[in-house]
Length: 129
Image 1 (tube, rainbow, N blue to C red):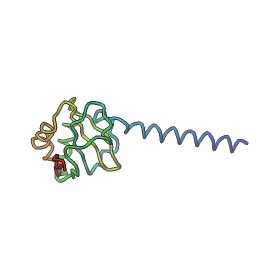
Image 2: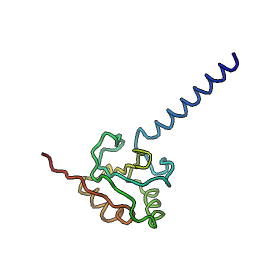
Image 3: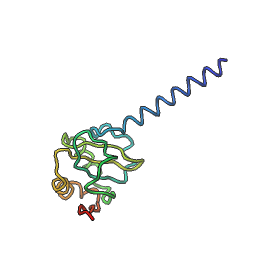
Image 4: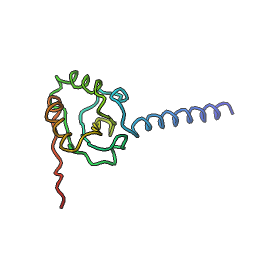
């Protein structure tokens, strides 16, 4: 009986831990809420309303890969100091960067003037059909 109770308690603890981790990626937040920063290899850039779940938004820039790892400290400090950006873990090695106050053009300018010293993106074609 004690074994069954212990296993049930352990199961509840594991489910609680898993749901807490899942909740951490449900919404964008500050850079400090992103865990396992050393595993980040890819980024996606967004110009979505503040607080939007980036997994359901269309990125302005997709398939952004780290190209200049020597600039990581500079870029991570910029992310940490920025109060204009939101970040959301989108996958094991992918983080979404959202600029809620940016138009898609302004997000592109931000990439071209700041972020391209660390990662390189391929632009999504914004034209339809």
